[in-house]
Image 1 (cartoon, helix red, strand yellow):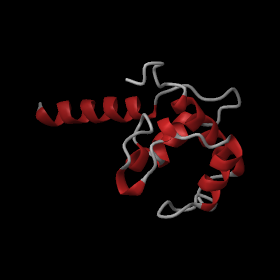
Image 2: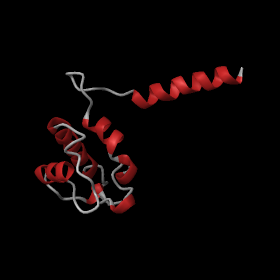
Image 3: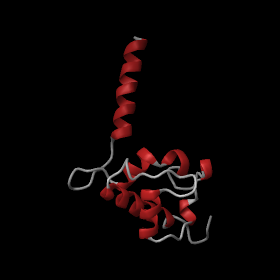
Image 4: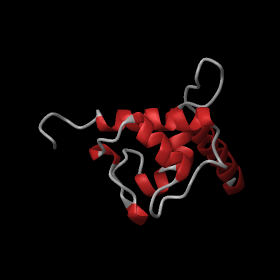
Length: 108
């Protein structure tokens, strides 16, 4: 019985980790790519700040600046040029722009 429970739990957990909507063409969304590549340092909300990561909620960088940093890296952040396509990098950069918008007007 315990093996059965572990198996069912594993299936449920893996399905929940991979769930989520995709873009109309079936490709991963910027949020999904961010979750797969960025949350260990930036966190799901962009404010984790581990390993020298910047707080994306407070970032005033333009979309193009974000694309350059994701593509080429900066300081301790590694380049994603070899790991992500140009389209994926743009999607991640666009997603990080939405994290800034999630700050409440009172800043709390």
